[in-house]
Length: 439
Image (cartoon, rainbow, N blue to C red; front, top):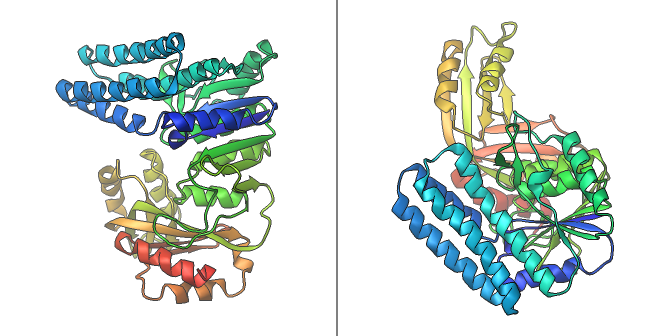
């Protein structure tokens, strides 16, 4: 069985949705198709939710009406027959009645999750109407019936596998299943989600659960590139990456792939392919256990980084000092991206400032705490990168004009990470493209 995931831009226009139907019917292999919400929908739903949280019901109503108008126009173009167009419009009516009803309900976090789920629910249902009009046999597979997370917001892998296999076995005659990305149920049975980019995660979890032949992630770019094509003019697609390399790139800023997507597929050794909906015959990138080659392959950047330095000449060498520092971050469920130490200081970076004030307050008894915001982590990723001849020399010669504030090397065989001021991100990526790739 093949898993195919299509992002918001791949289904964001009626003609794109038609193209998706062509792609999924190219072969007779059984498949599960995972769809995101139509492009722009989740952002609009977030705005609606924010307006409601601020009790600005008029602004929420305006946004709801504008979004509904967009969906009505979408249906008018997508579906041609009167009967099925009525069916599609009834789906739109159902979901926007819900959004209008919530204008009269007290806002809560549970309601927020319900609001955010509407995009995927509508995109999959409308796509199924289009498939029905085209005479393509299929079945809607509601993600809320099998996708679940526990009290720590982690996917319940065994539960997902059991439920999914039961559903698929009950419908063995079906070869095509359509399901929602992103959405799930939490430990309380409420509608929840896998966070931003969660449709990739959904696809990978399903692929692992059914031991799929491949997990295809279809986007609007032809695979993982060696650098950010939005910033650097000359970039090239990478044909093959290992799971470890891809995970490093995704975590440290490569936008084409959600960071959590790799792990489930890796556990079951399911190949992941990154493909372009707009150029379906492009080679793309395949991610497997094998790296394919040794050396530097790509550069990625992660913005919005906060650096925290704790200076303490009397405590740093004391037994258990680092443990106490890490316990502060653990207490506030804040992950650390990079860490460096010296005889008198320890520096760490985090990518969320939600608990920053509390963290700093608890760190202050250990020494002087300095906080720097708006930093960027630039990661150079490749298989066995330490074995690449002169890699450090070429790296630092390339960026000798850049004020690097931290370096992480040796923690991973596949990664060298630098911390630079956010204002220097673009120039850093451009210089590395020239120095490391000759582009």
